[in-house]
Length: 193
Image 1 (cartoon, helix red, strand yellow):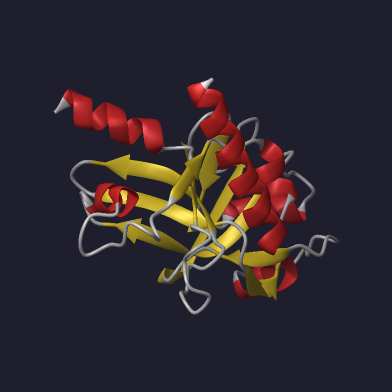
Image 2 (tube, one colour):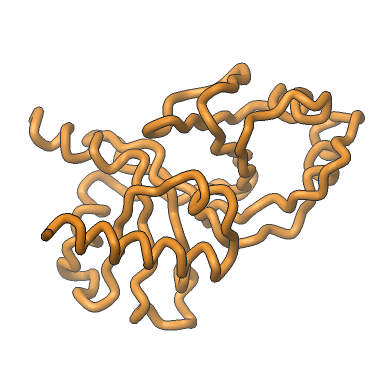
């Protein structure tokens, strides 16, 4: 239905933030996820923003036969448990590669080898973060998780927030989670007053 598509479209570009009560041993404890795609037939797709991976941009370039290594040292992030070899770059919308799509307000998602060649040559977006792997939800699953419906817990459901560039690209690891929780709190208060 149109209403369902509107709700889902409204979630693209939002953050899913692990609830503070989520147990430390959960793989999603203190995670911040950016939702970049959602469809009533295929479900939702996002990437974890704040978990460091174990590769540098130079290692990734080497693996993809990009031999002009960039001089920067950013780490590649762990994007999620699904398709761990999938290379996805979330970035600002002034930049494109071969396989680039809209990913919410002022952001795009790219996933192709050309983006590594461009970055190696110094042609890069203003802000960007590359992740390996993605997070996916079956149709209806994210709704159930957000509402805390069985089999999901009311106490551990996702918090949500509208991000800004600082939260998405400047912060990292637990600092990013704290900034996202703060944004959620502030936006919740503003919604009611």
